Image: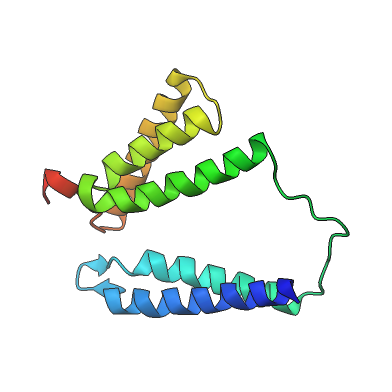
Length: 146
């Protein structure tokens, strides 16, 4: 029963996010607008919820919830992403994403400083290039203007 309720939650969350994305704007005269990517993500979430609801249930006899270090990693990711979402309006996307990614790579993945910095530079630059130049979408710039 809880599994079905969770599937319905994902469907409702996806539909609600898709509706909100439509109010932001999907396309404009210069191409994709800010709401296109959230719309696509919301449709994926809702579709996954529908698929899980329609597929036969596979109950685990004794579900293993994360404990100890594993729970710390899960909570680290959740808190890190929440902090990033909070920081984007104040720092801009690039700075918030870079700080979040370095912290997550160092604490959750336990990567070395060199690996963390290299992955962060590559990932943030790649996202900025893809959305900023290829798709023509403006990402929040924070206090650096734009």
